[in-house]
Image (cartoon, rainbow, N blue to C red):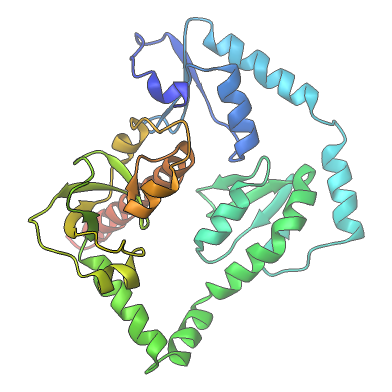
Length: 302
């Protein structure tokens, strides 16, 4: 369990400092090693470090990080881009950084998050990547561009038309209908705990209960995971977790064993929780944008 998640204490007001970090995993990991008591504050949308000297310690750490970086890294990145540019309608250059604007795609988001010092600009609705990260950007660009092209409205429409009336379309609709039922098969004699984060083959969820209805092995095989021979399964209802619930969930230290995966559920790892937390933040931002948009329409039409 990462220590900033374990530390649930609330320090007195003023005894601590916050800082924002780039969206790359390496920087975050180094920060957490340097500040083991740090934790993410969703309210502040920043990392919080407790202690009277936190601001000074954070400033010193950031200065050391900057001193450690190659002072010519951005210039080298510009030169590398000029020598072998990336030509794409999704990529623009600006004085300080590359700017990436694509249709929404989970693949794009995941790829860009792995690029050192990448940042999401919420006001302009685009990603920025400094020139020093050009080599990593170039390596990931084929996947980013391909995912962006697949996410264009015309491409989505073409795919829907291409499979219309086919077995693939029927299977896709069946998967969607099954997922909307918010049910998941669990062993009748080895059910998961309720109302805590549990990893499954459909992601991290919270089980809310079961009425004991038996689950059909064929349905389990098609939509969830291979059902074990001779095992009896029942349907359990589930819901997605809130960001607060996921942030305070303790992960396991080791990956689940194969037997746990075969069972269909296991206690989540830190990496699985990170994915679930990112998704929860995305859902919250979407809800906030929807609420803001609804409020603006109401103000325009009293």
